[in-house]
Image 1 (tube, rainbow, N blue to C red):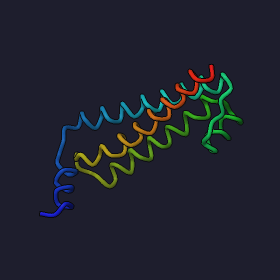
Image 2: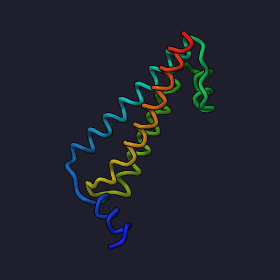
Image 3: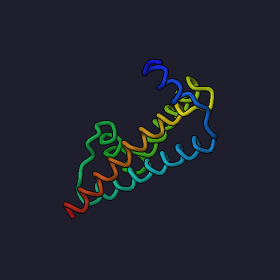
Length: 118
């Protein structure tokens, strides 16, 4: 068997639906943590590096600006995940895991900068 066959067997093995729900729940928590840490950072004088986020924050505020952006990414990822992966496989965990890692890393970076500069 080739490497691709092993990978397909691993990714497309059916899993319990609750694992998928928990993964998306953790993704939502990581997005909220990122918004919270960004809010605190901006309150003490840090600047948002994301150009879209920066524009939204400047025009409509931190919470109201970043929340729709995060919700849009989550909904888009959720829809794409379920359109292309209709069965309950491990592959459906890829999008929420990647989003969670990115947003937890951003939150960690924000809190690090808050502690460093405050």
